[in-house]
Image (cartoon, rainbow, N blue to C red; front, side, top):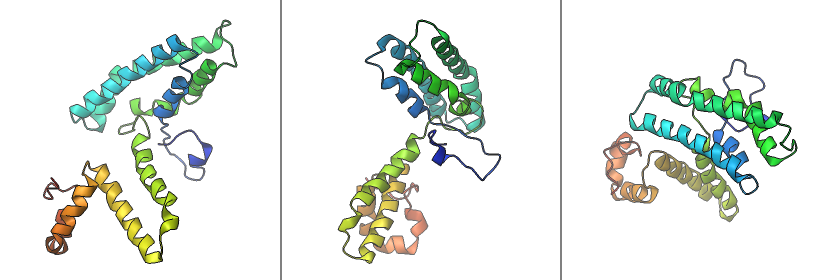
Length: 205
């Protein structure tokens, strides 16, 4: 799962299923909304329905194959509708072929297979947002890394960054979690596995 940048795609490993980020594809339309309000509103409404179906699957705690079946039944027809609509715009003599709308449509059509993997492959995500959220934590750390006085300070900061990112991943408040770890230092040393962010035993409230 990635965006469409060629530098993010594997060139050596074979037989890889490429899933592409729908947040990037959706953004192609959002960026031109002021110029094509009706057309973009139509596309965003369809994307909203796909998001609703994914939320339904998550709320039911569907396993990957149940989620796939749900998207095949409800989201794949919407994807095909968007594909058909984009093709109509590209082939219409009334549409300016160098416009932002046609550019967005061509982006969707060119990358349709990768953008629709969540309807074809069990467990394939719709977008890359979760990974990008995690990367932003490291990017913020990198921007301030020149303030570290020693290598030891940088090493400690790297560990803390990893802990904070992991806590966020499991919906655990990092500030409360780190305070709780310090307050219960001896217990943490005795059984560290019981104090991981994903454990229900560490009450950070």
